[in-house]
Length: 260
Image (cartoon, rainbow, N blue to C red; front, side):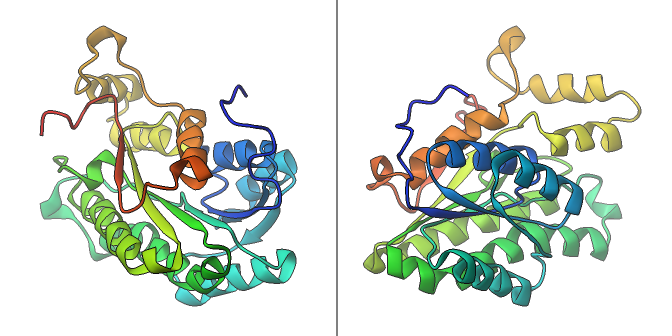
């Protein structure tokens, strides 16, 4: 992978990544590992977790982020294994879409528990360790965490919560040298996007993709973000180069939200 960063940028640093088996999580783990970081890989799905651990040589932890006790266990295992924590990247997320009048409590609970509750309690339980290292947190939000999307009210609510939560934590933790930012990408060519197209594309994933891209200002040149591109931005926000950036909602959306 081509990178603008020094190969030893994160030497001696320990970075914990949730949702490590997904597209962005895996790309982030690969990049940070290549830059010298020791990576802790947390995911709820054993097969993707094993695959990314084999790829990057990180420390895998199978866990369910929907429970605060599990978030606490992940941090405790990280400290037991490495003795420190320098950064947290919350990539874990799920998508919910559909007519809001037909939404179920299960839809709401699953999306909120993974996207918002899990992200909050990972941040919460990591704070004491990050105070020791004056570390950084990057929470993956979404363009849908800044503007509303029709048919995705639950998802927008969860990601909007992540965005504002990140700002609040940034203010709270600034006196301790901890930086917190929300990265807000548009559609990423990842397993989650493929799942969306297959489940909600009414049997025509290609049409689903085209409809999404029709919202982009690039017209015929429109494309989805690649996970490796998101990983580069995450690395920047974790790095010393991003020292002045905290409490930001960093847009990475090809200008999709620029007209709002």
